[in-house]
Image 1 (cartoon, rainbow, N blue to C red):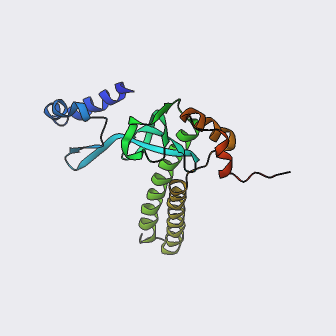
Image 2 (image 1 turned 120 degrees about the horizontal axis):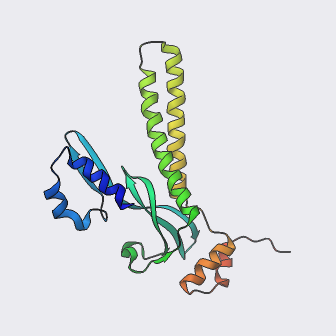
Length: 193
């Protein structure tokens, strides 16, 4: 993982003298988002939390820390169980858990939706105003714009309303936090026979 980062920094340093900057910022290099300016090109990379899943209302949820490039999650690093009310305390009171496949897939899906949505919005705008074949380009441009907006709306739905945990997973997460297992049933609508 860090070999790829080292190769990237090496390739960048061939065009720009970054030795001084890297030496002075090596401690925060992968803990905070940063931007490198290469003439007119910026490279934004770092770590971020994505893929909020297994939400147990009022108790906790699961997120995954990803290495990102331009805020698109690429490489999952670790998954965390975050109790409600401790979001601002970072990892001090969070519980590290094994990598959550569900969280990783949702994180990648969110990144894909943003990337695909923005590309379609841009491509749709270009196609709508292209001079050749105005009717066909305008129709295809509108379709690209609609697809781009649909992707961004889907991203917002995944972000605003995280995926809830099922009863078994919710009980497992509450047990990991040392809470009563039976108390989670009040948040679910189970059929009674």
